Length: 109
Image (cartoon, rainbow, N blue to C red; front, top):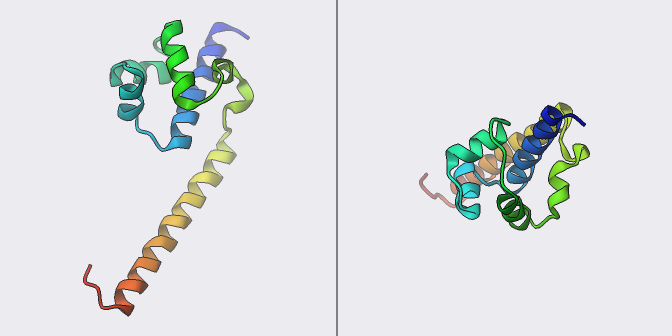
């Protein structure tokens, strides 16, 4: 694996694990003690991290550090699309359920 590919896999995996937890870049940056700008640069492959930051990331995600370098963790576009579609469907269903409950019990929105 070339350096550029390694950076891309690493960056994608950070976004992937951050997304699994529903964390913003701000929240993750705070958890590991780096600036949001630096995290954004890591996620775009513009910057690299120290071994200490790598350990903090792995601990924060509750994974072994090597997991951040595994290409198979990088979600493909079809999986992303399916997950995003599912999230949209859940949100619509949730909103409809809340609307029905508020109408049934005459709760103002």
